[in-house]
Length: 426
Image 1 (tube, rainbow, N blue to C red):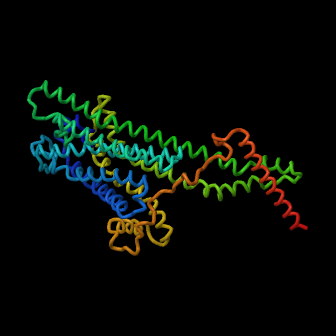
Image 2 (image 1 turned 30 degrees about the vertical axis):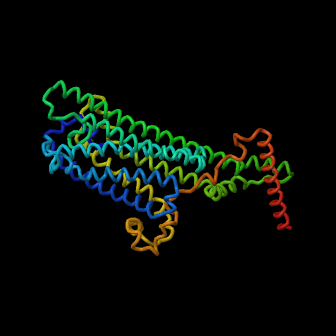
Image 3 (image 1 turned 180 degrees about the horizontal axis):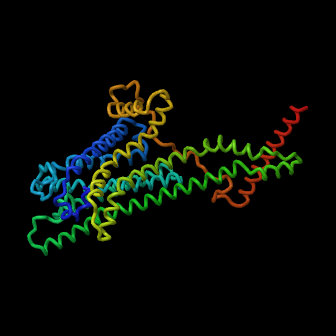
């Protein structure tokens, strides 16, 4: 599996080490991941609204891969061959089961690739405002690329007969039963090349590019928010200049009124895009957290350092959490809406209710609207947040006309306000 990739070259260091923690801790986190991935798959399957949404389809496909590999991680001791020369307990498998596990684990590289594609989707929707029709032209490729890469690379490794025990799991590794030292060294070199080419290379690229995409989205939303706020709420000096132009008395409350208006009006106009961007950012964060310890382990290995057994245990424990973390992000929106509907209920009650209604939707049909759309994000393309006079498609004259129109409306509003105040004083 992917954890064993971290320690594939440290089998000698692992000998004599008790590996009981690597038996039980990954089973716990794998169980959480199985539960989370199953909830996402169930919610997607029963909801027509979810099935019609492209982002939901990408998360569903990613969850299917996470569910498969989580089951494999949970059953690791059933796949490991009994002849494996380590202290890993409860080994019940043989060479065939070891090959099956290695094949399924290599196929799971599709999950990190789906994370990369999901971040690309958020970039196209939030920053570049791509339409559904334009996105659908790419959707087939978004599914074909990760699945094909996972299956093809798994088949290539199978043809090369490189699925063997790797410390405490089965993945890409040389056969430990090779007696010829020269042949073993050549197979070990081939294993390293395959590990980097078929797994760690694509994994690290996905992590880096996904992080850059989320940073780009964050900077874009922040930039547009500043422009919009500046446009909607002119400074006190600007407003007073307008008043002087109209022959009105300067106002000392302009700055304070603008601050109040920003708090009330700005979130209404920008909260949807901000929420969608945050959702995409959380998916990437969960992805990075799961691969933090394996990345540190691999960097230590590249520097020629010994990987501590504690870091290996952390890697094997955290990696299976991908499905669980994705479920937290996925049902976050539903939880917030349930919180509004049931303000007097505890958080535990709300979580248990979501779990029960998601995994058993037929038990309480009347109380669970499978088409409520509570899992679907806002369509920010219908609420574009752009600077009214900073549109690149407009020419200078149109920008000037737009600004003049806005100033005229502002001056008229100021004049009406002062007139009403004078009338009330009279």
